[in-house]
Length: 311
Image (cartoon, rainbow, N blue to C red; front, side, top):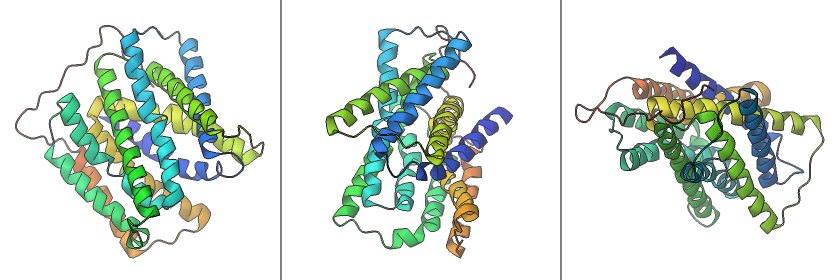
């Protein structure tokens, strides 16, 4: 239980802080190229760690196929779509759209993994969405599905759905004994190659910003935002389920706003404070050990081939 809470806290605090790091990535370098740099570096760090620890890197062709699918959904296309969505929408609106991943994970986990639907998780998800809506109410109140708004909405929903598939694929891979660290190393490499292909086809310039803010934020996003946070989060997905783990996505914007309060002078409103309280209440409900009376069983973990490694 303590280990799960530690993984949860690390994930929330790191990903909540990456919003500030991403801000320093925007400017001279094309966003898609910056994402390529980030995951290329993160993958290289993971491969170096695996070699240092002498971790097994042998997987079957079928394993690599599922790892590549996870990488495509979680480390490549979804990021690209979110960047495109922010061309049409504010980051607050995109954050609200992404928060619906909690419902997608509940649905997809049931459809693909036969995971029991937990009443408390659904209730917590509803509270969380309401809370996020209150936090970003000023942006939501001016939102329209006309023209650019509709395109941004569709891109955000597609990106969120892909991210959910990535969560489910990670849970599936862990159930089949594929370790998180090695899977992320290969998955990020496959995702990087896919994004690299897209950038080359689109004719994106591969420039680099030598300034300290860009380089430091890139290193932070690669090491902490990708290697450590994804390792913690996906380990959590395997331990407590994609539905419960995804509630952490509702807490990222809160940490981001707290950081923004300190560094950017964000002013809290009464609805925002109420929204945070509701989100925290939903979080407590979602993580409570209350399951439906029927079908409490879980599919067993198959760890015969690849023993689970720590983050």
